[in-house]
Image (cartoon, rainbow, N blue to C red; front, side):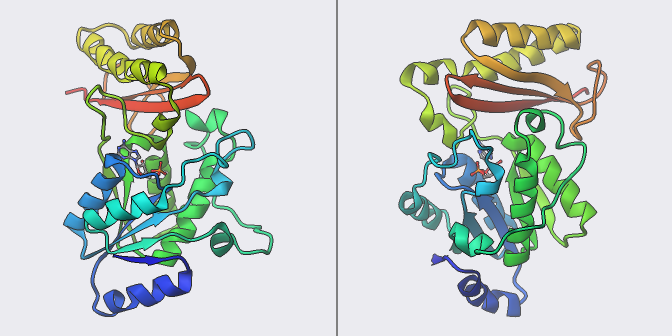
Amino acid sequence: MKTETTIQSLNAALSPARLARKTIGFVPTMGNLHQGHLNLVREAKKLCDVVVVSIFVNPIQFGPNEDFDNYPRTLEADSQLLAEVGCDVLFAPSVQQMYGDLPRRTAVVVGEITEVLCGRSRAGHFDGVATVVTKLFHIVQPDTAFFGQKDWQQLAVIRQMTRDLSFPIDIVGVPIARAEDGLALSSRNGYLTDLQRKVAPKIYQSLTDAEKALRKKTPLAEVLTSIEANLTKAGFEIDYVEALTPDLEAVNAFDQDIVLFVAAKLGNTRLIDNLVVKYS
Ligand code: AMP
């Protein structure tokens, strides 16, 4: 596996593949890799000739009181994992390489679907994501890009942006990888104390309980209230518990496919999860 830290050297590394018209698969990440990320790489390996993974902790998607400075940076271990799963090129640029020294005056802003769910409590977050992904798409020029369904709203924003701005890139969503106890894998799980780690799987349990209740015809509003009550009782501070369509439109009842979304804090650690509940 090659590791490149500049746009110029990445271009040089990808040039033979581009000339040979090989397909390029791209997996953008912020590193501290776990099986969730590696599943994206495995999927990319299946569908593309050459796989590029980026590791870049993107400062402009973190709010002023968020964990940019403390975000886990584990490049050496990440690089070993990526080599093991067959990643071809790791792109690990510095902030300076991505943003330079001059002021940035352009942003990619996706409307409406960035204002719900995480958008309400994380002002500017999705502008930061859409902007950096646009830059990475231009830099890597992939045929296909892979994103996790763990960040369902992010995936929806990227799909929308790709369509609206006519990026010639296929976007593939990959299912959520979970620990054995159901907790969605996340780099932020490492912030949890042992005790919090034992409580954290209750998010997924409450989502699967909710699905069972919906299938027994419990009204949607009642199901959402009971997720919130259960998690609050377990010690979570709820940011939101909501149901929307897979395209993030409002729903009032379980009369179509829906996605249940939870964001909740355990101490200072904010966890998100979701579950698709098919109607038929
Ligand atoms: P991150 O490094 O957190 O920015 O995540 C990079 C990519 O990995 C994003 O597309 C995430 O949605 C995806 N991802 C992170 N955790 C998981 C998981 N548990 N299952 C599936 N995809 C994930």
